[in-house]
Image (cartoon, rainbow, N blue to C red; front, side, top):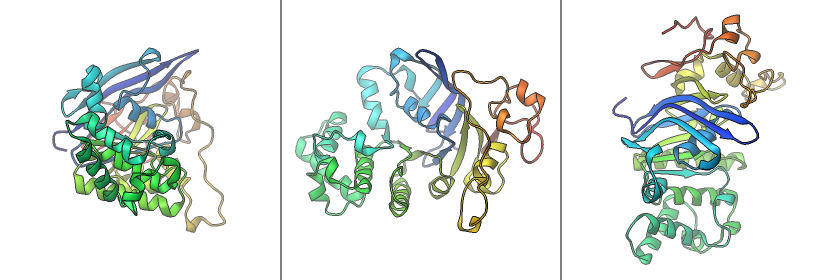
Length: 326
């Protein structure tokens, strides 16, 4: 990998309420220029928390963040005031999981995109509106002029998601964060949105982090996949390699639980048990209570994330051979 656009080192996030929940636990990864990284895992594994931490969206009063985040060499955790405002949307932007909630219902789609552009750039209203309309056309919204003056509730789910992508790309970010952008869409529209994201990524040269719990979606979009469990990255490989030769038992379980036409009439191979309570994580490997390869070492010692070239693994007993201690 060339000089990375994004570097995350030992990132930990705790939420303080009635109890302290450790949502991220020493997460480390890099993202190159013009690369798409897929974050894969069950609900509660830390995927969305990772994206929101990259944008500094968690409430400061109840959140404790440790570690390092650098985008283009810029220390994200040190940003304040206007610098942080410009970073959000200008350097890094986000496509939220539910665009119906992300858009303000009392303003038109065109006005919201126009205001986002003017908030980041010294540009007059007419020029900003022209670019906003251009963005709607770029994401292939039919009758873009008409949709420009529409309110969010007047658009279908697929059209709202395309408008959300237009808003996210309006200020030409270097990094796009996509938080399960196909949630609640029917299968045909899901494929359209995934292909659109990949096409736009190639046209603009931006980097993308794509969050999903669907391995099929990750394969369509990502160059590399990082698998998360209990707030940690447990495996990372290029997409073709992780699909055909998963090494972590959790990754193997996720792939085995995927349903295809060839599985008709066969019982679903679900991963037994449930994810751990993030406010009471067990010692050792968090996946140990659900793992078929578990040993006393797994229950006692947390495996380190060992990285080599373009892959990484945190497991004492991988699916294919033992991992040597660093």
